[in-house]
Length: 581
Image 1 (cartoon, helix red, strand yellow):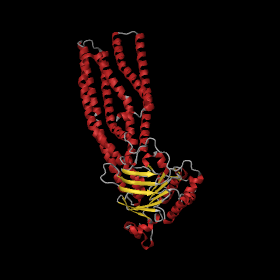
Image 2 (cartoon, helix red, strand yellow):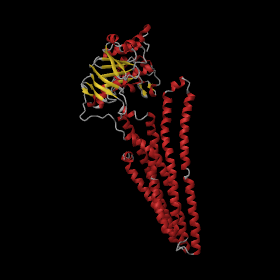
Image 3 (tube, helix red, strand yellow):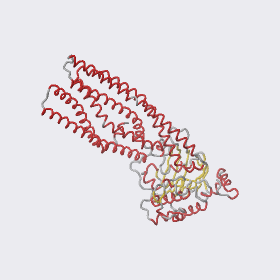
Image 4 (tube, helix red, strand yellow):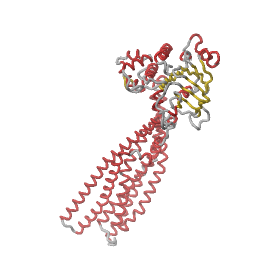
């Protein structure tokens, strides 16, 4: 888990190593200064010449400046290393997500991925900075201070044999009880982000149903739940300070009482005022650095869960891979399903699709209808390998889709979904997702074909009109038509419309389909729809039911042979209302 994350250091290994070296130098100097100070105090008591005093003072000043330089430089290099490390982790996670198949994305919710890219990475960044600074300095200072304390104080340093185990035990118990609280917080962060995401996305629905108070209460509950866990964890961690202070004051009192008695009675085996003062300094350093280590322990405990969550994404293996010696040319838009069955995971008990055998010639228009949950969308998602079949074979242009280069295959297949997405930017920017090199004339032609040109030119800025995030400043029908135009700019061999004209009126729907027949006759067109009117002039109509093709044929044939198709047709055309669903 840690090896996975540390690979993200890359170009920031050098500032990381430099930081460690700076902190090592600072720790050595910090340990030496009390030793020199103790010798200076003893020399002053016994009488010292002014030149020697000045030389010692200048030495202490020089060491202090060097220590300051090391500490300040470590601050700069550690900030660069930690920020760069977090940048690389964020980049690697985002890049990894782009390689995921739909089956991989299904394992992680959107809100969870957002939490991992923000809160979790921030925790890891802070932990990393503490690790290369305090986690290097504190153990070295602790080691040097203990050694120097025994050198300077002899048996008097045995006080640390009592104090240190007590402090270490207390800090370990604090970390042990704080860990479960920190672990539960991150899972609740996912729920909090999910609540925010749902509320922002569904703002119109929330206001339409006047559910603002309900949403506020739901958010308040999630926020209070996180606050409760954090408060519990912080209360436990807050015990650090009193435990440290108890040990510190005990240590100071012991050294002052016992050391003073030894000096006064003359039984101190050579211990003097300077050595006792250095013992106090070293004692303070030992306990302070133990407390710093406890802070690191708590931070690493908290960030360990974040590292685990980040590693889960980085170690996730995509279920769809590019084959070796992949085919990089799609000959035509013909599609063949050979005994295809599919389920979303190996653990699933039932197949979403079963026993699909289907042949679609290049350039044909295929309509697909069926009830909710009949796996219409699942069927077409197998064509561009958004999922891989569980059994059987899907072929495009006579070649198994698993033998194609993924970019080549998906560049030849354009999908327009019912809830397609427009991105922040101009209408031109969104259209050029289909073809980055498209000219203005090509965009206008695609928009005319998708019946979008008229409403686009009605905007004051025309094709330079800014689209807000998610396309919130255009209607559902306008968004669908822009998405169709975007797909057409790809000039695909296969065009899939997954209920993507549901928000347009029947007249516009008919005009779009007529444009398809006249302007892209060689493109294979698959139209998933709820309205019979949207598919009745297709070359082939598939009737899906419970993950199977219940019937297929032309409109007239299905009226004679398919009870499902005939029932839907009669419901929708009853009283002449072809829009009824």
